[in-house]
Amino acid sequence: MEEDAGLNYHNEKKKKKKLEKQTGRLGLINRTGLGLIKWIYLPAFISPFTHTMTLYDVLGVSQDASETEIRRQYQELARQFHPDKSDTDSAKEKFLKVTEAWHILGDTQKRREYDDQLKREKLYQEFPVSEELFLEDLERDREGGVYLHSCRCGGRYSLAAQDARNSTEKEVVVVCDSCSLSILVLLNCDDNT
Image 1 (cartoon, rainbow, N blue to C red):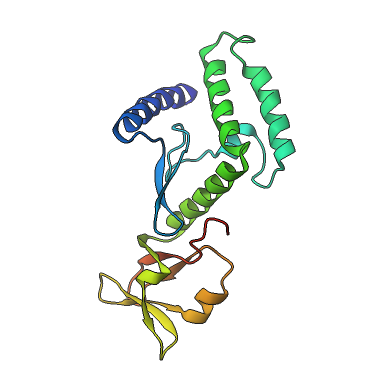
Image 2 (image 1 turned 180 degrees about the vertical axis):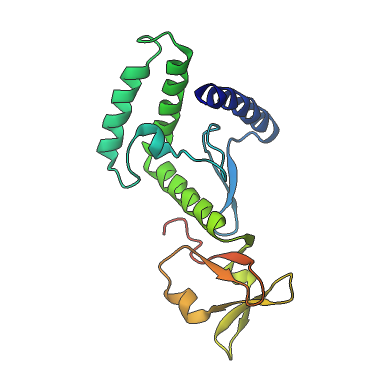
C-alpha cells in the first residue's frame, strides 16, 4: 500500500511538472473573489476530490491546531524523516510530504485557502454539485424575494434573498426542487472575508 502511494506520488509529480509547463502555475482552479480565477496550490500527492489523507493528516495534527502546534509537529517530523538521518526511500518521500504540508499549513493565507478547498470538497462529496455560480448570476425575483436559477431537468433552484443577505458563509449549496442536483452559490466574493 505504501509503495503504491509512493508510485502514485511520483506519477502525480510528473503531472504537476506538465501542468506547470502548460500553464506557468501550479494547482487547481478555484473560483473565488470577484469573478476571477484564483490558483491554489495543492500538493500533488493529494487528489483534489478523492483523497483520503489531508495535509493535517500528513503532519498528524487536527484541523483546528494552532500555528505553534503545526510548526512543532513539522519540526519533529522533519528531523525524524530528514534524508541525512535516514537513507530509505520511504523516509525521503515522507520528508517531502511533510515539507509540502508545512509549506501550505505554515502560511496563514495558504492555509485559509486550503481549508476553503477542503470545505468545498466535502460539499461536493455530500451533494452532486452540477454548477458553481456567483449570487449575481442568479435571477432575482423581487416580488417573491428569492434568487432563481433553472436546472437542466426543468426544475428550479431557489434561494431566499434574506438567507443570502444574512448568511455568514462564503458559499451555500442550493438543491433543485425537482431532482437531486444542486448548485454551489458563492455569496461573499470579497477576498478579505
